[in-house]
Image (tube, rainbow, N blue to C red; front, side, top):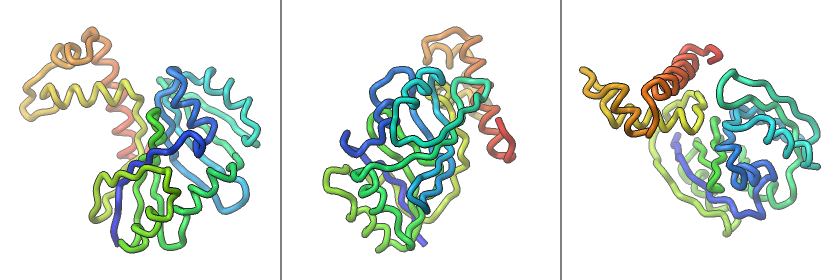
Length: 216
């Protein structure tokens, strides 16, 4: 069994309208697919969306492919989305290259504002290669890493929370013993210490909840 973590750069004509909205709108940072069922003609998804819930819902109402949806807030900077949607012919063609009996796409799958989809694929090495080579030529492929499979617990952080955790790591906030404090984190983020503290607490709560299998 082999695994490949890949970043796929999706041309505009292959983007689902809601991924296109993520790319176009400053109101939304990214979508993260937590669960996916594509066995029928309609694809059913559970996503976490990092961004403005009202702006996202307004756009979602205008997408004819979306048959059913509901959202639920998480008390933070994002929300959960349950949606059932049809795929256009171009989208379906791109997905069919990856939906093979011998290859698993393991969530979470990140749909980013730079038109990339980041996902982990598991299977035999020759089948992983065939799946990637079967993508339309317009789709850019970057293999981020390969090797044995390591589970990634899906704890979706907002973009700002992720930035705060990275800043804290770089500042030595998580070193043992600690070599940097909240003031160092705040300096890197360009914010006050209370804001830095709040961002880290929210991020840490989500990460701990994911590790315990609880809802953060």
